[in-house]
Every structure is written in C-alpha cells, then in structure tokens.
Length: 430
Ligand code: F0G
Image 1: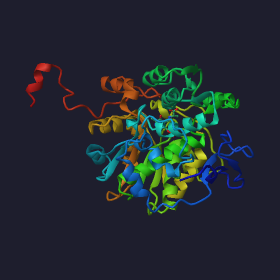
Image 2 (image 1 turned 90 degrees about the vertical axis):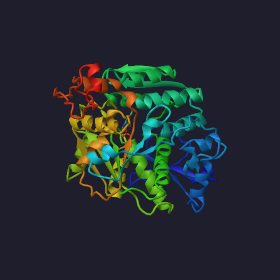
Image 3 (image 1 turned 180 degrees about the horizontal axis):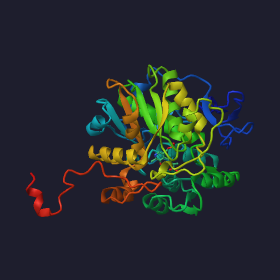
Image 4 (image 1 turned 120 degrees about the vertical axis):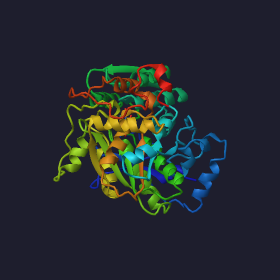
C-alpha cells in the first residue's frame, strides 16, 4: 500500500525540478513558479493490480465503489485517509454508430464523463482535491469556474462540511451549473470579466492558508482525474485506443490523461500510450495557436475568448505546459473547430441517444476533421452532461442560436419528424 513518504510534489520545469513535501500547501513551485506534479519515490509492483481492481468492482466498500479510489494504489493518500466521495467515476464507454458514421470511423467510442455525480468530469478530480483540503485542515475551499468546477466543488465541499466560495464570470455561466452550486450551499460571486479574471482573483485569495484552491492548477485534482485513463484502459481490456480526444479549456483534463497514461505505461500496465489530441473552439484557442506556431517561443493568451461552449471560454489556460507535455509525448495534436461544427457534432451525438454539453461536442467535431485512418481506434471524452446547458439546445432547434460573431447557427441535423406541423399528420408518414 502506498505510504505518505512515497509521494512528493515536484516542479515540472526541466531546469528547476524542486521537490516539496506532499502536504506543503502549494499550487505552483515556490522557487520558480512552475506547475507541480505529484510523483512517487518507489515503483509500484503492478503485477496483481489489474485483477485486484476488477475484484473491487464486486465490493460494496465506498472506496471500491468509486471509480477513482478503486485505483488508490496510484493515488497520493494512505489507506487510512478519510476520503470525500460521491461514488464518482465508473462512467460508460459507449459505441455511437451515428457519431462514428459522421466521423467516417467505425471504431469511435464515447467515454461519457457527464455521467458523474454532478454531471461533469470534474468530480473525479474533486474527490481527491477536497480529500486533501480536509487533510490539510482548510476552512474554506474556493475555485474560479465556468460552471462545472463550481458545481462539483460545491457538492464535495458539502460532503466534507467545508465552507465553499466560487467566483464565476457574470452572465457567462449556464443556469443549471449555477443552480447546482447554490443548491449545494456554496457562496457564488459573480464578477465582471471572463474566467481568466476570476482565476486571478481567486489565486490572490488562496494566499491565505486557511483557504484551499481546487482549480486544476492544484496537482491533487490532476491525481484524481488521471484515474479516468485507468478506468478507460480497463474498459478496453487494457488495449488503449490509437487516439484519445478531449476538449481544451484550462487544460487540466488533457494534462491528467497525459499523466494517467504515462504512469500506466511506466508501470507496464499498457503497451503504448494513445495520441492525445486537444480540441478548442476557434474563438478561444490559445493552445491551438501555440501548437500551430512553428517557433513556439512564447505562449500567447487570448485576451477576449469567445465561444458558445461557455465551459471552455478560457483565454489563459493555467495548465498549458502539462497539456503540452501530454501532446508532445504522445504524438498528438491540437486543433480548432467552429461554432457551427460544434453545434452539428452535438446534434449528432444526441442522435446516438447520448446527451452532452457543447464543450464536449468539440471532440466529435474535431475527430471528423482529423486525418485518422478508418481502422484506427478512437475515444472521444464527453466532459459534461446535456442538462448542463439546455438553453443551447432549445435555441439550436428553434433556429435562434447565434455565434459570438453574430452569424446564425444553422440546424443541419434535424429530428426525424422535424417538418411535421400538426400532430394529426404524424401517422400519415409511417
Ligand atoms: N468540458 C467541460 C464540460 C468543462 O466544464 C471544461 C472546463 C472543459 C471541457 C475543459 O476542461 O479546463 O480541463 O481543459 N471547465 C472548467 C470549469 C474550466 O470551471 O468548470 P479543462
């Protein structure tokens, strides 16, 4: 079993690599300001782990019921840690024939992280971060958010009996996400500005040591989220796909998949790593711009990010270096999709009976544009549930959805009975 002394925090900057105690309340390296990873000193004996993890699926122990804590041998906590869990993870990996057809890729699968307790992938990271918050004796947990982190944190804070404050860009968060945060008892501060403004504010607040910041800059969040790679590999009987495609906003998710697959590979649990591709909305694409800039000398933030996919309306992603590492190490790529492409892909995913929010649909939109051979296997990660943003859907189908640049979004994927005006006509077309 992992012991506390096995793990430590380490700066990812190649010329720094400073090490810190696991329980040092840090978000970035105190020497150089670089991002932090959680590392371990000893290799894991992984021989029997696949069987053990599978056996745990039949157990009723809350740790085993969680799709995160089931893989606890790879998490930086001891076995006696009191975990804060809502039974997160264990999300489905779907076949999706219409989406597959749309992408001309018979072997496309969708990993639906929207099936987590609060409806997004954030829960897999939040269970670890809030467990750490409680371990450190924090009084108040905080985050900046485009909505999902807020909803997730609020729920886990409630479970842990911690005070919770979240900062969101005023008028740019869906009502569903705000409602969740309020219902779970969080204090919501709406700020004039965008997500990046909120992030700056909250980082200042988190300098007080009674406050614990749980945005994905927090390496414990990444630890929880990396287990999705474990669960996915297990669902595929340890044959990883050729490509894994994720949306990119603050870039914590892509960083976490990179770390998860890297660790699985190092432990000999998988034979190769999937190519990780990150998809951004065209109007909020600083990472894609960095990728396509042949010099890559400087990461340039996007001052005024714009997209209807409000979850990924982010111009200054805090974790870009980690995501960059994941893309480079795996031979992946970073691409953009338009607002119309996102809307089309979302409607197609819906026609598979799978509901996701707009940010998640960037994946299928992106896969359609990627040059992938049809015998390659591809997994798209759907990050949030359809019910997170119902306004978008209603507007799409009544034809009033308008892109940030003013151009109307066309309904290219309609319902089968779309043109019927009268209920009485319905039987005539059968
Ligand atoms: N998809 C959804 C549904 C999200 O909520 C987010 C991020 C992303 C994708 C992007 O993931 O930031 O790890 O690259 N939402 C954050 C929030 C920023 O505050 O809820 P990322």
